[in-house]
Image 1: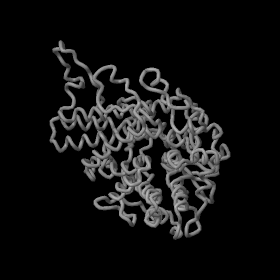
Image 2: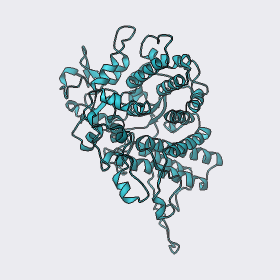
Image 3: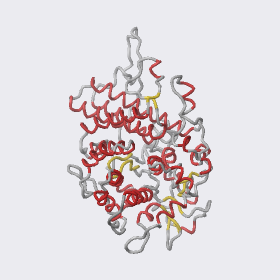
Image 4: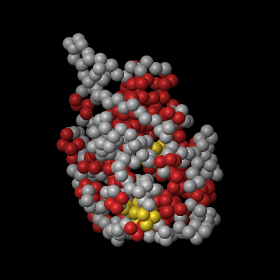
Length: 504
């Protein structure tokens, strides 16, 4: 099987009055749940599931647009009002999509907290309890990672609310949120397994925890700590460090084909499957899809798509800065976008059959089911690759470069270049030269993977690069305001202890 199909049990905490003497055994309650391993696995499955919820999940189709739409490499067109506001930096605290993602993250955190609180009382071994709590802490950390890079200071909630006032938590400083992420990932790293049996493929592993821990340190510019984690995953020569077996796929495009999901390049990915129905409402019900509508959202109208996103010409031009050793375009260009080159086809049609809109030179190909005739029905089952080994290599190379050990960064960057059939890097690069190369490689390696805006922010290049692009709405970008989303207005209205982000 490509991936496990979890049995999803939806549950809520229910308070029972002392005078209640009868309990319906058919109702799932806090009293009769969390008894055995099946209950724990169901609770974990419900926690994983939030990641891909259509409207609230960071890797659902709205979340993918949110993560990509603000960079200088992508643009969301104007038929979706709230998404258009985000991509043109005209959003407000009432814009729905950040609000939905904020709520989705806290749903995931609440469910992870349920697992952490209740597993100790389940009838399972102590070793399993430790592992399952570690898994829940990984999931909690990943939700807080999403919150802190998008909203900055947010409420830290690590226990289940006991009383009504416990829901009204004030914001913690950004560095405190990062510290909670570090604590959770360290616990996950200590107790998660290296791998799982085939029926559990897709669950968080020790390598995923180490990878995200290293990435968290990079975002905080804690380079020494980041290097220590990267060294657990990667040898000095750029190969995987035992006991890990991560590797770059020889064919870059295989990362984005459903037949190649859960491959050796993947440290963690979001499991999509075309089962469960076609309901994309985001509500949890028997007919909800376990796949994603992102491919249809990005597909052209000529093949049943909604055509909500397309690459900027700046990104198109970035790919052409260097040809391969055979004087061809970078294979990542062919895999990531499609444009009008000789004999170009898309969804089994000549590229010339597609209308040119908004004077853009290309369309998104990565993660699309472009080998089919169209994108209908609207459910795709290509997994979202949340963390790839290529990301680890480039971040490790960046870490070493910032620390002044540029020669040690060469093997990491050359592994990326070698797969792209580019010449090895010229020897003797200085710090800024190597950082320029890394920035270039990250832009073209991670098209449509939600990295660009956040890379530019941590490099302090947001204003410069967005201004120097063909992105619509760039004139509205204000670094003080748009580096983070506003805290959603409904949170401000309902929580008297929370404050709006500066400049909003």
